[in-house]
Length: 196
Image: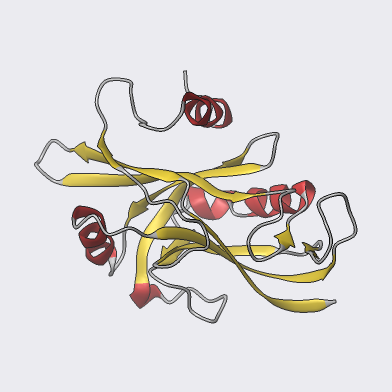
C-alpha cells in the first residue's frame, strides 16, 4: 500500500452572488466537491463508507469556521493561514456518494478569489487529503486505485486546471431560483441540505 497526499478535481458547481444590505457583495460557491464509488480522472476510487467518514470528520471544523482552502494546492496537508482564500460553510454527501458543499471567500486571499469571480476567470475545486491507496479490485474497471480506511480530508482548494472540463456560471440569487443548472442538481442539493 502507498500513502500520499490525494487530490481530486471537479468543476460541477455554481457561483451565487448576493447583494448585501451595506452594499458589500457576498459570493457563495456551491456544488459538487467530490464523488464516492466513482473512478475519477486520477483513476482513484473512494468507497462510499470512506468518503462518508471523511465528510463526517470535518463537520466540527466547518461549524467552528476552521475548514479552509487555498488558491492552488500546496504539497502539504497543512493549511497555510497566510494563503487562505475561502472557508467551507457546508459539506454533505447524498446516498449515491455525491459530495456537495458551499464555500465563501474568506481570509487573507479572499480578494484574489473575488477577483477571479468578478473577472469571470474559470477555476476548479479540488479536494486535498491524506491517505493510503491499494489496487482496486471491483466492478468499476481495471488499473484503478482504491482509497482505504484512514483517509483524512484536509481542505478543498481552488485550482486553475482541474481534470474536469466545465466552468462555473455566476448567477445572482433572487427569489427562490438559485441555480441555472439542471433540476436534478437542485433537487439533490435541497435533499442533502434539507432545503424546503
